[in-house]
Length: 358
Image 1 (cartoon, rainbow, N blue to C red):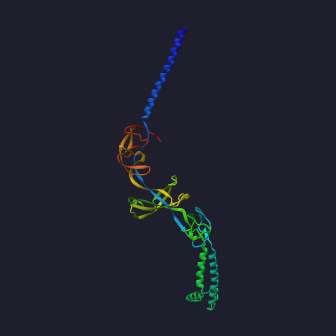
Image 2: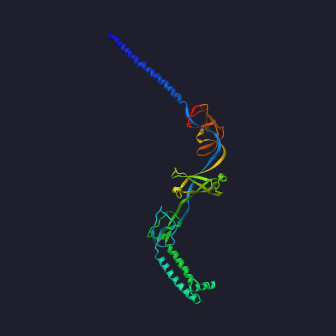
Image 3: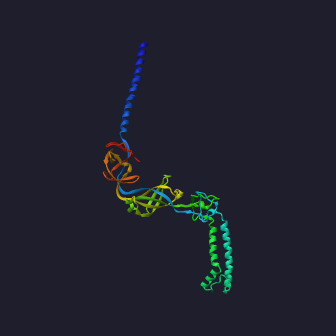
């Protein structure tokens, strides 16, 4: 009795272990088959080929320069007395930048002023002998006679000497001729001004110019007022806009045309001398356009995959002009056909695909 019970227990255990194990295995095979079937269908994005105006991008490299910039020099050869700014300082028009020792210029100015006062008295004395009692009342004298008296008494030369001395005294201080930022400042106190080629460079960085070159084949399409986009190499996340200001009517020995664009330097992003990437846009009418990523190289030729009936169909195409986003098709494709532009790198002719909804 015990042997029979033991035999039945062993048989029951064997059935449970092996019989129950086979069923999940069959289900796993079916599941794997379904997965493989799904993996054979590639999910893609499509876009219809369309005729439209094509935005052609001319790309170049440019150099930024300030529209208003001045190299300032010392007006008097003396010892540098004070430096009021440093490189990077922003100054207003008329602000003092540096000064030199003003003792000699000050003495000369005071002497010239005293001499002018002396000559005024001498002139008045001569005029009184002519019947004129006030310097403001000289209308009764002929102009030529008044001019002669002023020369003879030394008044004319005294006026000139005073003006010169005053100008030199004012030039002790070098001032900003316009508002801007200070650059290339090297002057230091107690050094002779002759030791420096200049005081500094003053840059008005509110309005900048960008100079760049394009091929001579584009000169017919360029005109002042066209918009340009520029991106500093130092900060590719910034895009600024400007307009073509000048098209140089001359082609250089390399077949290039020099273009100058004006740019408002918003937030002072651009710096004098900075290198930038230039994109100049113009439109070309009636082109068959597809996304640039839809065109792939295959066997030394260019192809696109057209979506039709759940399959990707291989088409050889001839391309034309392009920009950073789109490309024109000259032959091999019709308007309205759906081209695959995403997840298309691994496709082959008649690959099964499904369109991803956006």
